Length: 208
Image 1: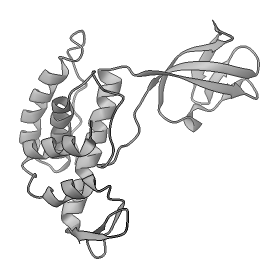
Image 2 (image 1 turned 90 degrees about the horizontal axis):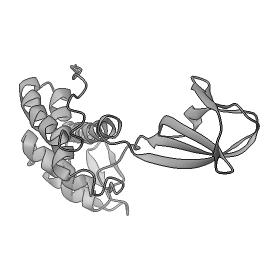
Image 3 (image 1 turned 120 degrees about the vertical axis):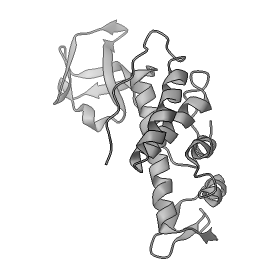
C-alpha cells in the first residue's frame, strides 16, 4: 500500500488534489529533500524536478503528519499489531524508551516459558535473572514518508479508511473544523467495519 496513493485519495476529500499535483509525482521519484529558502524540490539523485511554494510544502508536511497520526490511531484503537523481540538483559531491567515502537508488553519468555515481569516508567523489569528473553508486545508504526509503502496492514485495512482519516486530521490541522467533522463521520463508519466489537473512538481533540 503506497503512502502517496493514500495521500492522493485524502487530498481528493480535502479539495487539495490540484495543489499537491506535482508533489504526488515527486513522491513517486523518491524525493529526499527540498530547499525551503528557494522552494526547489530535489530528487534522490539531486536532479532538480521543479519548484513548489513554501506554503504548499508546509501543507504537504501537514498531510503526511495527518496520515501518520491516523495510522498510529488505528494501530492502537482498532488493530493490535503484535510482534516478538529478543532482548538480552545485563541486569534485570531494560529501558523500553530505547526500544522503538513498543506500545504494550504482553509477555516475556525464557527458553519457551513465560517468566514474571513488570513495566514502569523506568523500563521493563524481569523478576528473574539477567540473560536472553523473548518479549511479546504490541507495535506502534513508525512515521512514514510520502515515498514509503505500508505493508504490515495488508489484508487488515483498506486505503479508503486511511485516506478518510488522513483527510479529517488534515482539515483539523488547518482549521476547517466543519469539513473535518463531516469527513470524520465517514471515517468512523468505515473504521467500525475493521472491528465491530469496538464502536467508540476516542473523542477528537481540537487542534489550534
